[in-house]
Image (tube, rainbow, N blue to C red; front, side):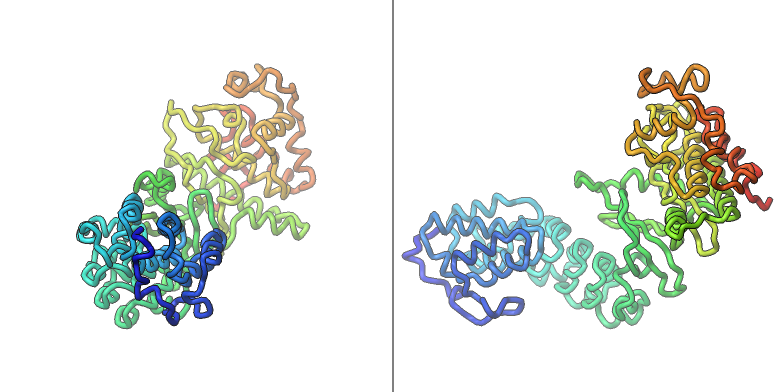
Length: 528
């Protein structure tokens, strides 16, 4: 820092009225203790912004050591997760730039990761130390990389860069509201505007009247009928967050068709831009798959940061249906149980006929259409079944996972889906999960208690699997096990539902009913 005693206060440091966005009551009035206190408010970004906008600039006119410490605290705000804090830090540092000494400049230059490199160039523009700003801001690729990670840096760039189509496009894809700082002609550019409102619906406020007039989706957003756009669809509401991404409900403004859109980000650990393997699987398996009992993939949209899969929309799933019956203290009617079982097994047979192994069949992944037909969904864990291929064991959700998976089998096939289907159908009959273990061992114990512990008699291969232990309790199969469980629903047994479930829930995989055999069982209500 220059010698404080010999540096006259800069004109920008004098007391003045609040500018736009500043807090009028405390504009430029905060002393050092208040400034440091607000700057340390990690849970409230508004207070950090207030500190940076309202600090009296005279607090930086102190000893060299203390001034460097204060500058360092402000410099750290360039890495704040909230853009408004970064923006306030850039503005404050820009005002104070003429006071920087070489040590402070070196501190700034050490933050040379994107997008901070571009931020620092904006900070140093008032002094253009050693031509650094010209070097950074004159490098188009550096600027584009900066705004692609912090779109609102566009505000601080020169007019020539705000008129650069590729730079603006990169900025709005990262932060839609950076459209506000683009040159006017680019606010009428279809690709730029649609990218901006796909990232952030309120960005439609900065689009030209002409583009809004010619685009139905933009008009819907402008009128408050939606959150943002995704391709040709207006996003209406969030439906939930899953392990592999977010699902939203959307509508086509022309046809009013409702869809569900699954949004999955690229490479969540940040090491690259590759499409996630589970997204590739789902697209490759479903793009040409049309069946009344399998959810239909309608479209795929790819962006710089995510991939979005558009599916037909169904308002409920089987888990909700079972839960509603349970809350109403009633059973799912036997006709619906049989029809739903038929839907599930028909859809599963269609998958297996195409060599698709679902691997995560459960009530939450079985959707109910408005027409009362069930559709199998969520193929993120699915695989093409190949002989002699080692596969991961920890796939199906615990309660619906087959005993061979729980015991560590690597070579498995369609039988694991058939087991899961049996668990789901049993749950429809009773309203309760059949094997609700709280761990892999807990689930195995529940299975063994009902079907018997693997032995040389009932399943010799099971005793050779990795996680099988000789010390497992030796339960014998309960001869009337499933029939006793289903006894509360006599109509299930009357239609041979217990026989269907005994075939699907056979301990030994090779003796289980296939999806084709199960679909043709008398319990199912086929119309062929």
